[in-house]
Image (cartoon, rainbow, N blue to C red; front, top):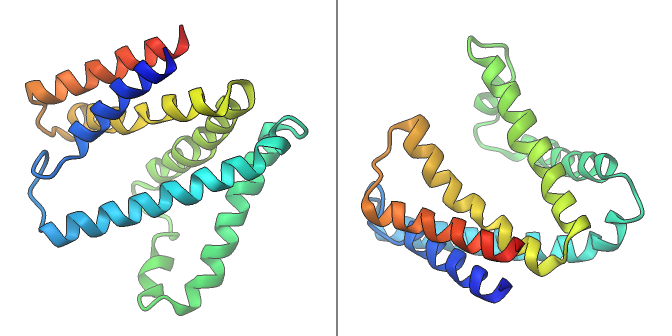
Length: 171
């Protein structure tokens, strides 16, 4: 079931990420984005395998906070070398939509990391990693709902495939 569900989810992700599926972008930009995405997923996969033993030994809130702190430390250390550091620092000044930034930080970073780590703690790494790929498809759904992006029949089919795959994995 995990393999079949994973296959449906993978097919859905591939459909949702194929070129010319959304707004047109230059081919080089698309492949550069794919390369960075692949590198990101490889480092995430390696890191979660490294910390999996810690997930059962320490509170998830502590592990999640430590993970966020590590990323923050790296970003702060890199800031002096950023060519446009003033613009980066300007994002931390209170603005009219700062509340949305704070909510996005809470839900998009901390709580999502906490629940993501909980998935790895309470299920097998294989099932959890397959289910985590549903987030890619949910981005398509949320972009349709909140950003007004188009939702074709093929996208609906991809979303349905992902949810069917997720149902197979959890049953």
